[in-house]
Length: 164
Image (tube, rainbow, N blue to C red):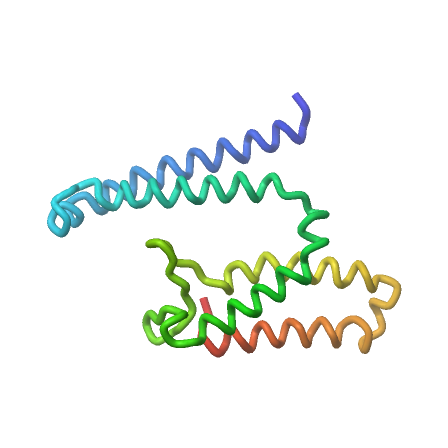
């Protein structure tokens, strides 16, 4: 078997084992509470399985996107993340929990734009530094602009505040 394929299978197997343990833990920890609150001891289990299904679909879709495609769209994705970080700060658009306005709620699901930004920032910075690899030691052409972009994003996250 190809070593890359073997590593992939080990990773998928480990994830499947952890997911299975998590499903059992969710049910065992929440069955009584779910029955008292909702009359259905599997309420939280069903909800967790729905999230797993959505997460599995998104993971499969993400695994089939090439790094080159992400690199080509790194600037657009970064711009979209910045727009989402600004939108989440607007009352009645972003959802506030515990004094922090950092969530979007859509169709019963919620997500944090700052979590998407983490991944997008990695692709953006990798692309940015690759485009300027000849001048990496020149602070004005590489480190300065990179820190400005990173500072803008961090400033928007601090405004939420999202220190998680």
